[in-house]
Image (tube, rainbow, N blue to C red; front, side):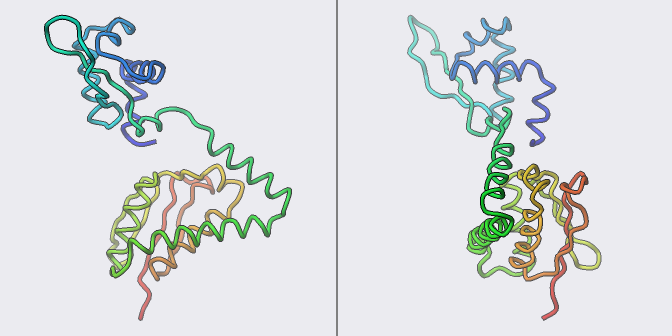
Length: 217
């Protein structure tokens, strides 16, 4: 969960607004004010904050009756989906279990290897013509966008520390460590670097931490 999502948990009013918009699909400030028993000014203040966090957008201008300024309808954005519980990881793990029972571990290994190859082809396109440091920065940006919450630091010895504070596939990785092995191999291949995993969420650590060192040419 991103920092904004974590912060939302501690704002009961914003949470109520998000839940109401999820339920109604769209609502005006007046509707939210009436439903939540808040002043229009209070609702507007929280909506502005939610818009800045990319969780709420103005959907359209409503037709209004009589004179005066028109009201606006607010809706949740796609980004707001991360604020609600999902069971994708449970479904993925259950499907992997079924595949394992039907076809065996060799087939599971092939699936993860095929996934690694697909991701590698995709990432390589973004790294074409880039040097070692640019490749690492590109990898960090891509993984961060995919939800891994990456922090990248250059060490005094010239190596890089690559930290992933979140693992979107952690539940699968806990049962099928091929996921971790494939990520390790993926990084090494993409960067043409020596890659060491220092910490791993699937091992009970709070983060996945890698060290990248450029290979001597």
